[in-house]
Image (cartoon, rainbow, N blue to C red):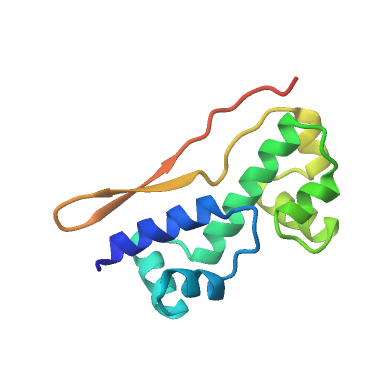
Length: 138
């Protein structure tokens, strides 16, 4: 099986299980590959580490919830895989330039880490970030 095929399987699995506990060990076990091989192939195909991609997708989902729901920040933090609201706030601020509370007040969702889609070419793959639509929260 080629690297791009594995990367597509990883991307599909991540998207389907984003709200669950998602570790590299679990991914490796589910997809029947070594964690190190998966990390190497994913990085070669996308230019980013698998951990960074998962974190970015989870923060992206959290940003959507902040802008479009009244769900408490602490619940969003735990759903995004953070052990505390403080750790979530630091990571969110680093990625979005605003604290979760500030982002919620702005009320506009914008994606910082959209889903990756691989476009297959004859000799190489191109990576496309699939943008999410922005919307003003009611």
